[in-house]
Length: 87
Image (cartoon, helix red, strand yellow):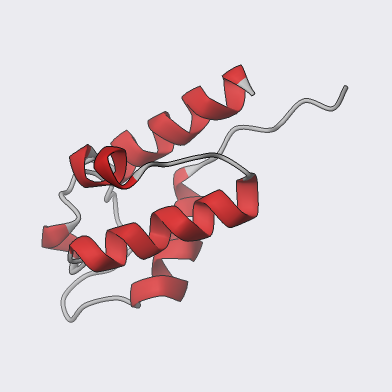
């Protein structure tokens, strides 16, 4: 059985750029791990779009309720990695 490599913040940056782009004054290449999604220019709909892309790409279920409760990129990446580990 193949082992799924960890989902990284770099992976998440790529998806965030594809879904929402970067807001003025925000650089996703900075240390964004613990910055709130709103502060990064992603509204709740953009976060749901990111979650949907992750579901499609990785096959990991991210319910809307869970996506709405994950405040930062680190929290979302940790959530995805927890799900990958138990898959």
